[in-house]
Length: 243
Image 1 (tube, rainbow, N blue to C red):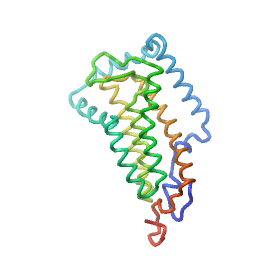
Image 2 (image 1 turned 180 degrees about the vertical axis):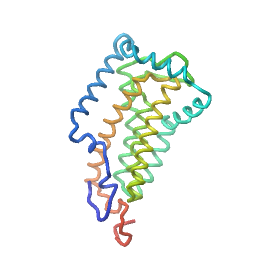
Image 3 (image 1 turned 90 degrees about the horizontal axis):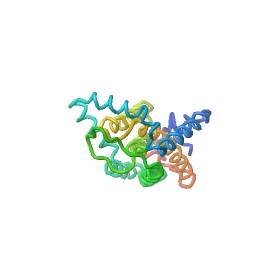
């Protein structure tokens, strides 16, 4: 990314998706192969192979429901809904645009491209949703979980936007850990509410990892075309390039 004077979390974040998988190509390949195998299993005989563990997990989760958790997971699930993700995603894009247009473009592309990717994958696999004891309505095919993909596309980019406004690494790490926990919680909420199998959530997380890699690639290319000279939060307040 574009170098900048002072400590620049935006240009050199402590951790990126590409950085995590650097030197771990076998892990990345394994995740891709696992997703393909799960998708094929979802295609064959109504996902009978996946149901050997999905159904026991689903019944165990539904048997553990409480009124307190019902309310909590309903609210958590909303944070991965299409309406919320698109709305808050536009806010994040606008906030990012003030500091770095490349980040604003990347966030917008993530918000707009994710539904197309989701619908395409779901249409190809065409797996039925759980129909045991649903707590909320669920429409369309089940695999992979769209809520999880949407959560990754939104909350997975939050640390990037935050890094435009701070040079504090603790703030960055706190945001990153909170975002990761929220993504996992949104995935758990979909199984808890009975609208997604456990393997749907895993599939959504795997696609989300590749989605973040693609977004990072787009961001890198955008930075080359439109460097954010005034985009990074700087330590030196006297630096005229800092805003």
